[in-house]
Each structure stands twice: as C-alpha cells, then as structure tokens.
Length: 256
Ligand SMILES: [Zn+2]
Image (tube, rainbow, N blue to C red):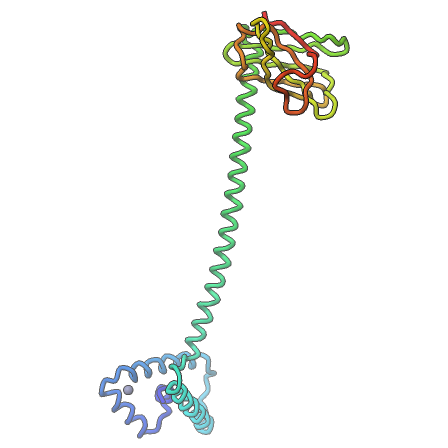
C-alpha cells in the first residue's frame, strides 16, 4: 500500500493506520514510503498533465492494490521483489560495462599497434645508424692517406681489376665494378695469405656483386694483421663461404 499512500490514494482509515504505524518509528516502512514517493515523483514526470477522472483513479488504485498484494505474496514466498526502476539501473550498468569492456579492448589493440610501430621504427633507425656507421668507416678507409692500396689482378683478361684499401686500425675495404656474378648461389670469398711459409689462407667475408657488377665489402676486423699478410686473394665458393679455398683464386694482390 506504500505506492497508493504515496499517490494519496488510500482511504482515510488506511492512511491513518499507516501513519500511526510510521509514527512508531518503523524504519522498514519509512524507507518503503520514501522509495514509493520517489517512484511516484518519477511517474509524475511521465504522466500527461491531466486530472484523472474519479473512475480512472478508482481503476488505477485497484490495479495498484492487486499488484501490491501479488508482490507481497511473492516477496513472502521467495526473495524480495526488485522494483522495475532498479532493473533499469542494472540494465544501464550492464550496458555501461559492455561499452567499457569494448573500449578497453580497443585501447589495448591501439596500444599494441603503437608499440609494434615504435619497435619497427626503432629497428629501422638502428639499421640506418649501422649503415651510416659502416659508410663512415668505409669513407675514412678509402680517403685516409695512411691506408695501403692493394690492386687485385685477375688471370682472366675478361675480369676487371679489383681495388682494396687496408687501414691498419679501421680494416679493409674491397671494391669492384663490372664484376660478373658467380653462377647460381655461389659467392666470391676473400682470403688473407700469410707471410709465414706454408701458412694456410685465412678465410674472410664473402660477397656477391649487384646487378651492375658493383660491390663494396668492408672487413672491419681483418682476421690477420697487415704486417703478417703477404697477399689478398679471392676465390669462388659455395654460398656461406668455405674454411679453406675449394677453387683456384680468380684475383690476387700483394700487400706491400
Ligand atoms: Zn513497518
């Protein structure tokens, strides 16, 4: 009967009875009346502004009483009935959680994408820095007057001569132009021939000329000192290089 009371629809006896009970300080009923008043105030905003006829008011009260009675029976039988406005709140909260979860997922995806991009940019930058470092080192070796020139001649008159410059601290730069590419996956490999009589050739890096037959090879850490090296030699080897030459050298140049 709280809704009916809040609506002012109780008859005098019922109203006095409830008010007398509320005057005893029953907190449950006071709370129920407060909720009913809130609900009624919300309904008032929805209702068109029109004075209901007595007949309509009577029918409405019958419905309200019937439902209040049923709700009372249900709440006695099972758990307390949850008012509709509370369900609306629960639904709103649920929708908000779904919305938040979707937003959080999108945010996680965005963060992942951004991290991946940052990592790829960093990698690119490190590669560029390494290339720049190599280029600077090559430039110093090629231009420093302290570098030793080594001309590598070929036994084949069709093959061009190759140039090497050896800087005692920075390493060897070997360059070539119009060098025919070795067949298949085979590569050209640089060897250091030691001055020691009977010393075995020391393997160094491998290379393949580009489409125009050009190449620049930097050996930043030569496997042997210049003073202990008699000559540089280049052979054709399988991909990945060999630990000792498997073909006769195509180019040889003495280190003076
Ligand atoms: Zn009470």
